Each structure stands twice: as structure tokens, then as C-alpha cells.
Amino acid sequence: MFRSITAHGVPNCVIQVADWKDKSQACLVKPREVEVQRENAGVDFVASMVRFRGGQWRMVLTPEQFNTLLQAALQ
View (cartoon, rainbow, N blue to C red):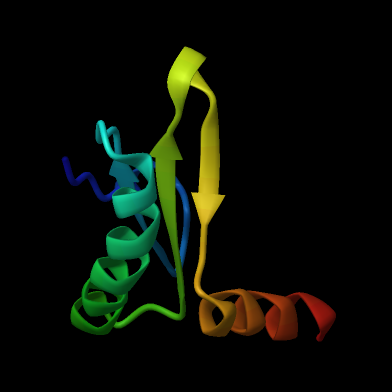
């Protein structure tokens, strides 16, 4: 499942949403896939949202994606 929610008010960001049976696979694959979407969209920030049992959501980023976000937050 892929959805970009940039149209819903997250400026300069692409977010992919995953509700996969294999949560580990989603956590490994989606951050890499969203990086391609970031390049195509020409934005600075990305995140992947993975849905876990019970409806709990977690944001998943690579160390590089987290660093980009952190550096922007510290400025």
C-alpha cells in the first residue's frame, strides 16, 4: 500500500504508509522506497509510517533520513 499525504498539509515532505503483514519487511523496504519518491517530488524530508498490531503506527526513517530531519530542526 502506498499513499502520499503531502496533499494533506505536510509541506516539503513525502510520507509512505504501509500496512503489511510482515512488519519487519515494511520497516526495511519502505524507507528506501520513499527516498525515490523524495527525489521525484523534489522535497527535503521523508518518512514511512508502518501500522502495527492494534492500530499502532510508527514512523520509520533511515539514519540518513533522521539526520536530515534533525539538522533542519536544529537550525
